[in-house]
Amino acid sequence: MSVEFLLCLGTILVVAGIGMPIAYAILLSAIVYMAAAGQDIGLAGKILMDGLYNSFILLAVPLFIVAANIMNAGTISDRLLGFCVALVGRFRGGLGHVNVVASLIFSGMSGSAVADAAGIGRIIIEMMTKSGHYTRGYAAAITAASATIGPIIPPSIPMVLYALVSNTSIGYLFLGGIVPGLLMGAVLMGMNTWISHRRGFALEEPVPLSELPRRAVSAFPALLMPAILLYGIYGGVTTPTEAAAVAAFYALVLAAAFYRALSLRALGSILVESARSSAAVGLVIGGALILNYVVASENIPNILAARLVGLDVYPLVFLLGVNLLLLLLGCILDATTIILVIIPLFLPTCRELGIDLVHFGVVAVVNCMIGLITPPYGILLFVINAVTRIPLAEIIREIWLFLAVLIVALAAMIFFPGIVLWLPRVFGYPG
Image (cartoon, rainbow, N blue to C red):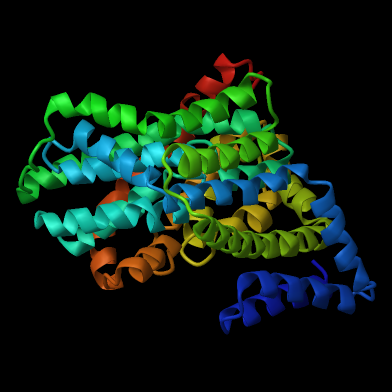
């Protein structure tokens, strides 16, 4: 490890530590490395532009962001919520179950945990607190926990980013996320049931079963989006990037023409907000591309792989060690940074140890999503605090049990790779 690289690491730690946004910290540290190494700083711009130009799949990111924002702006979220209330609201802890099921459904449309929490999650928190059966902290905690499912069930922005750095099939990654996402939903609903019985949460007034068909019909066009998306990708009709464009267009037609719930002014605001979100993600991606060049120049991934293989590390031990590290990093770093900067360091070792990259990718993304609700810096905790004004202390006090069952689900995915790989293998994955 050279002096220049140590200087690079020192720069990123110092400037990020004093509050500089992580994207700018990464860019600055990479430029410091190039200047110290005597390389042309203009090379940073070339690396960034080449990386973006050669990564057609990155176009899926802003398109999925647009689709999610349109879903939140129209009445689509309300219709989905009404269907979920009729479906599972009749059980003890009913609105908690509604929270999880709504996240499972909405995750098939947005690909973003933040979009889930800030959109449909905010509506459910208001419903839970107004009912008088749930504390503010509990409503916020289960909303944050269920929002982590968003990027696991396809579409998934983090999996698009992982496909970028690992050169893994985005289609098989999407398939690999379906069963783990359902498992996460199941353990959260199980914990909600246990807590509801233990605390004696009152039953909600059930929606008559005769009302269920009408609500299902109302939500059906929105429920079709995941099916259209998956058929486009796995039926060979579209690439993942084209499927993202179809998702955004379908959301627009649904909100504007079918449900008539989207004005031109609202659409303009959605596009502006989507551009801001895409730019924020793009800055991190650009910085990561340059930093990855720095890491490759130092030959760190290959050195790390050689050292670990030389120690005769068992694949399972390696997976457990990496996931423990990612859980710790998730307390202080955002998921995009971990996927683009940290995970590429371990990919050569995965190849050397024979670890399936689809399995590793899905597990890593699940791990990063758990990091979004891990105190003290879980971003979903701050998002929900910002949109509801519920104190962070109340949210953190209630989050631990949900965090624990999600970690148990993560451990199951690590020890039993079939949870991730079964569905991709059904569709022809050779791994």
